[in-house]
Image (tube, rainbow, N blue to C red; front, side, top):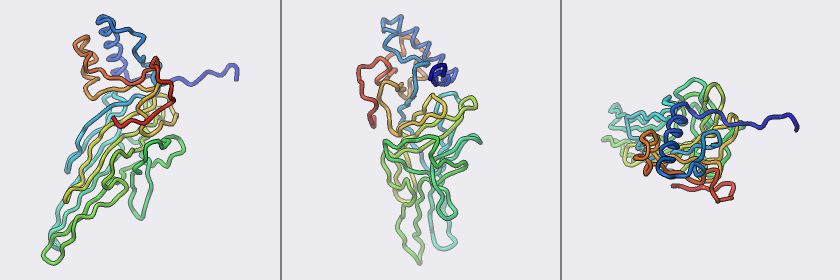
Length: 258
């Protein structure tokens, strides 16, 4: 329709924008063509590679858009009781760090669970999001004198590999969607997990595909990227990117667990 302006991405965080610009200047000085860089204004998905362990009795923050503000928290707890023998319980949950943020999930009985999404699922405005803490996985065992119950791992994330959280959060007062990729297991009496990557869509209210890490609309950041971009030319080896807006890969998207 004539006269209607196309949607444009919201600004990246000032911190990320500044560091990307710093890298662009350093890359130019080092002889790297600026046309090979994915500029912030053109980015639609920002994907960050990660390898962060989540272990019992720790709370791990998640900052999806690198604005130095925690958006969600992973909470892993373990406790032991002796009232009826010697029992152990472990629980891994995710909870919003800000009031307006929400997690895709469902309710069963009196508990709220975070969905373990398959790659390729569309995460967007029509998803069943809810505020508050949501359980991912639980483990229980009883090794008391009168009972001997082996560890039982339950929940949508129990013993899962490369599943995705659907996340809804605010950037400058506007709704954005993202995902976090994890693998979860229940060794012994604990629930443990590893955060292996996360991403968000820079255009407000636009859906994102769980697991999309490659394509012309994706910027990929390695875990050390943000710390190295402002270092100039010395930080160039730390910069990793996948299929920028000038890449030759014409496929609309593909899944990659890298």
